[in-house]
Length: 373
Image (cartoon, rainbow, N blue to C red; front, side, top):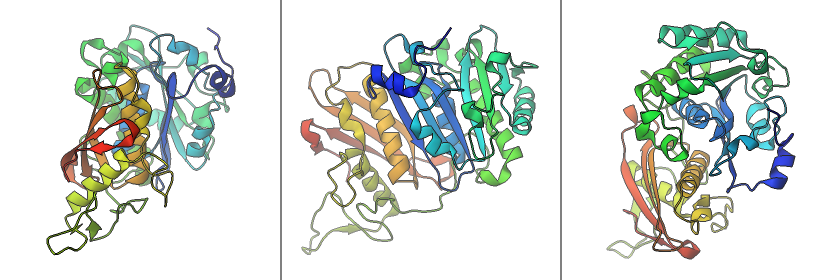
């Protein structure tokens, strides 16, 4: 079936960012590769979740274009050879390998592997088969990813892997085969098959590009080693001593500070989640766009928007932190009130142990109530 929109500009002229679709990305400075899902969200579920999980677990870059409409998300599909949303080129321009995640029809549980990076493709095939997954001998021409214009091949080497997962296979990754937006956004609904499949793919990349992946030990529980413990924004402080936030005085009338690394991480994370971009004069871009969901009705889209906003902001401003859970609640009976609970841990913590759960209530106008610090 032909695409409804031939280009991103055409799509953007008819659909609304933040309401009909989302764009999320993370560029990791030391990464040599990226996991991308240009047909994410409900266009081809759960490709966003697979790309995001693999990228965050191994410290690689990430991009996803996600359909989040109540229905008709297939109309947001732009073919891989014509996909031109500008952000993706910022992600791929310095990448040496790319894994492009896709979903295809079919009740069978099969993977089709294509793209011009045949070495990485062969490694993925070997690992998937060894893990007990079925891989087709060849991919149909329409999904073989061999066109140089395919977005998988638009990295610095001109070679990438185009991975197509059948609907039947994707359904095994979630309880009750539920691929609705609410289900795929809930990490607790992922099955062992999700993690086994992702682990096989990540292991294949590690085999082919060992220098591009930090030593994380056994997969999938671990997270990349931290190369820094400071906030990119430098707010509300970094180093061995950090001002207590919110601002307060100690018993001696001096500015209160903390030297506990865990508390420093948690209060910086709270600052990211609870700051509306534009509030922090020194760095206007600092903060998260959680406020865009304040006046939405209680529907599956609002929590998804909040989750994406928190993940994107934390990846940008706190690279030394890993989010292990986000629990957003949009209150039906209190218009414009959102509760956001975030579990954070340092990226160098074995098995990503939760340091602390930070709970923030955001009121109309951006006023923050609560928080453990």
